[in-house]
Amino acid sequence: MPADLTDRLAALFQWIDPGPGTSHLVSDISGWWRDPSVLAELGPALVAPYRTARPTVVLAPAVTGLLLGPLAATALGVGFVAAHKPGDGRLPAGPLTWAQSPPDYRGRRVDLAVRERHLGPDDRVLVVDDWVRTGAQLRAIYDICAARGAEVLGTAVVAVDCPPDVAADLRITGLIDAANLPT
Image 1 (cartoon, rainbow, N blue to C red):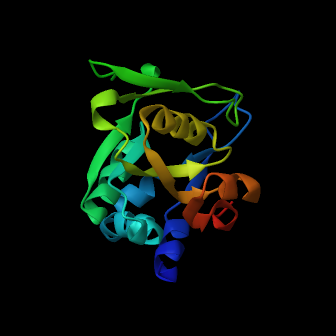
Image 2 (cartoon, rainbow, N blue to C red):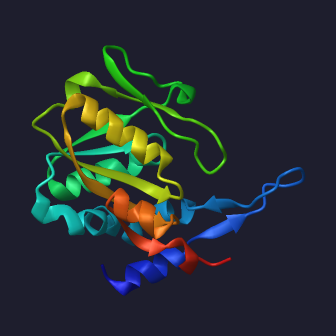
């Protein structure tokens, strides 16, 4: 990946203080979506490490994954499958395969679902997301893929913020290490 893209990702990122009564800053990645050159480069940069593995589908969790997943899928010339969350109000009709994540960085367990008709044993899956801290949601997605008989090739994220053993276990590649984002 070009160092220039990494530099632009860092420059367009900021931490936001959500106000009184909060205990942590919130990441603001909206600058990534606003810059047309970054937006155009994200899909190809995310999929580059996996291109030779020949994924047949890109799978990404709601909500940010609904933007990044299609960018990655388009760069590969394959289809896209969304992993839905019941809390986002957009559960699709029809049979779904569900999994629940282990506790995430805030101690939450997240339920995720994929339409069964869009994922099967012939699929070689590239998972895509914006940020990974604990890998909890990725583990649930990997469980869904296993239940459907699909092979997970790995996960491509924009920002890696997880311990090295999690990144190795989940075969995560990233465009920027969160430690390199401005504080």
